[in-house]
View (cartoon, rainbow, N blue to C red):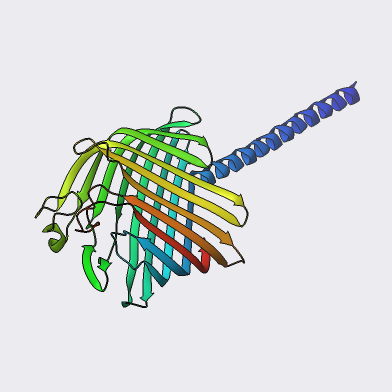
Amino acid sequence: MKRLLFILCLGTCSSIVGQDNIIMNLQKESQKVIKLKTDADQSKKWQKGILYNLTFSQASLSNWAAGGDKFSISIGSILNMYARYSKEKLRWDNNFDFNLGYVNSTSLGSRKNDDRFDFVSKVGYSVNTKTNLAFLSNLRSGFFKGYTFSGTKKNFTSNFMSPGYLLNSAGFDFRPKKTISLFLSPFTARWVFVTDPVLSQKGLYGVKTGQTSNFELGAYATINYLKEINPNVVYKTKLDLFSNYRNNPQNIDVFMTNVLSVKISKFFNVTWGVDLIYDDDAKLFGPNKNLPALQFKSLIGLGIQLKK
């Protein structure tokens, strides 16, 4: 009888110890799973990147307010930086583009040809899988002096924040596919700046003579499209449209950039960029240099591309 009781006690203790070990192992495993999920969620919150191009290019310009020759050979650099935050229903996209180029012109000698920076920040709250309520801010200008040319005579037309454009807009951000986004706003505030004193006295870009800024209220739309055609070919385009309710709303301002990039080796690529601008207030063209016109720039280049 004593032996039987001893065996039963021993079995009961073994069972309890075994159950404790099982429970402890389950707890450890559950903690591992939770930790892995947390790390994965953290890594998805921020996405950051830098793309840099140094390009030897052939450029063609027509009615380009920022200045340059109709045909030229140039060296240019393009810097793109982005940071994107995503958590649950919140999304925050930041993008900065900076272009800087120098030209070797057979008729007018070496000089700066083109520079532009464009910063866009957009915060959105998800309504459904394809639509966000969003607020967008955009600052766009150049850093250095720009000229247009009539023969060998140059005409000073642009400088830092002359013109400069600051836009604040609330609206809807549609993302029907991963490759495309469409932002629409019926009410958008835009400020046009001409801070250079010489250009301010000319009354350019819709800013009255002697003043440094002009406020506009209108409708705004921007379309962004990025398509990886194959691992070596990428096409990117951006189209901005703005209608000023306060002055000739039927004359829509257009700003469009297109870049086709073809990777030919680990570090080298060929790019073709086409920019189109129509600004009803950029009255710098025509026989008397007092009319708006469609501005066109085409840039074909072979260069070095670095990503991070």
